[in-house]
Length: 389
Ligand code: GDD
Ligand code: MN
Image 1 (cartoon, rainbow, N blue to C red):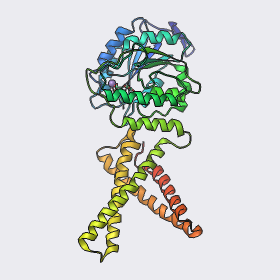
Image 2: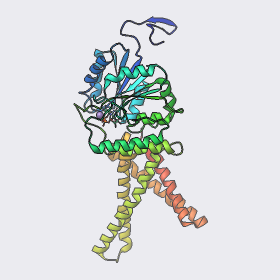
Image 3: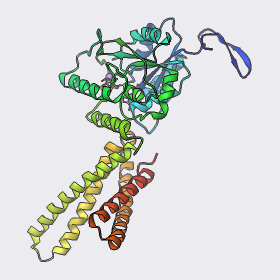
Image 4: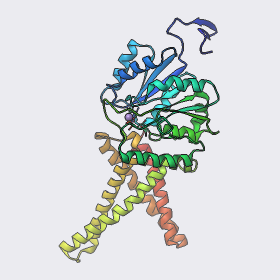
C-alpha cells in the first residue's frame, strides 16, 4: 500500500530509499508556452507540500517556447518532476486526462502552469479529500473567501453565465464548475473516464457531468493570481469549445459532436455558395450582357463551389478540428485532399438524389437524402484523408 516503505514488486519485496517513496499526490500541470513559469511551479510546490509525498507531471503540447525541454531539465535535478510531451495535438482538457492517466497516485490535482492558482491550499484540499467522505475538492473563486484577481468585467460576466449553464448540465452543485484548479480521488475519476468528452478547457465540468453517480464535492476558496510571465491561451474560440462540450454532453451519445460541427460548417457553406454565385453571375452579366448566360452560370457556379469548399475547409480546420489544426504545407495538402473528398461527395450527392427522384418523384426528400449522404461521406473521408491522426 502507498505509505509503506516496502511493497511487493514481481513477487519480491522492495525497500524504498528515502525520497523514493511513491507519491500520494500527483499534481498534473498542463502547459503551453510556460517555460518561464515551470521552475516557479516546482519551487512553489516544494514549499507548499512539505511533509506530503508528491510529484508534479507537466503535460506539454510541444510548446514553441520549449517548455517540455525546460521541464525535462528540471526533472533531471528533481525526481519528483515528470514530463508528458505530446506531439501534434492541442487541448487543455485532453492534456489533463492524459496526465492523470500517466500517474499511479491515489489523489491527483489539476493546476494551471502559470502560477495563477494558489498552490498553498493544496495541503488543505488533500486533508479534506483523504477523509474519504468527498470525491472532489474544488479550488473555488466564488465561495466565501475566494476571488478573481483583477479580471475585467466582461470576463467576470462571461464566467458567471457559463457557470449558470454548467450547473444546469451537471447534477452536482459546484459553486465554481469552471475552475481549472481541483483535486480528485482516483476511483471517481476512473469511473467518469469512459464518458469524458475531453474537449476544450472545462475538464472539471466534463468530469462532473460524466460521473455515473453525482460527485460528492467540497470547495476551498482561493484568489486567482495575476500572470507574471506569458499570456492566457483562452481566445475568442473558447466559447465555441464550451458550446461543443455542452452539445457533446447533451447529444454525444447519439451523434459525435465533431459531426455536428462538420454539418453546421457545411450548412454555412450553402450560404457562401449562393452569395458567391449571385455576385459572380451578376457581375459577369453586367460586363458581358446576357447572350452567353449559360456559360457565365457554369463559371459562377464553379467559382462558388471552389470558394464554399475553401471556406468550409478553413472553418473545419479552425472549429471542428481545432485540436489537430493543420498549418503551413500541411494546410495546402489538406485543402487539396478536402477538395477531392468533396468532389466525390458531390458526385454521390447527385447520384443518390437523382436515383431517388426518378423512382419516387419527391423533390425535397431526394435533395435532402443527397445532402445527407454527402455530409456523411465528406465527414468520414476527410477524417481519414484530410485531418488524419
Ligand atoms: N497542454 C496544454 N495544451 N496546456 C494548455 C493548453 C493546451 O492546448 N492551453 C492552455 N494550456 C495551459 C496553460 O499553459 C496554463 O498552464 C493552463 O493551461 C491554463 O491556461 P491559461 O491560458 O492560463 O488559462 P486562463 O488563465 O485564461 O484560464 C484559467 O482560468 C479559467 C477560469 O475561468 C484556466 O484555469 C481555465 O481552465 C479556467 O476555466
Ligand atoms: Mn492562466
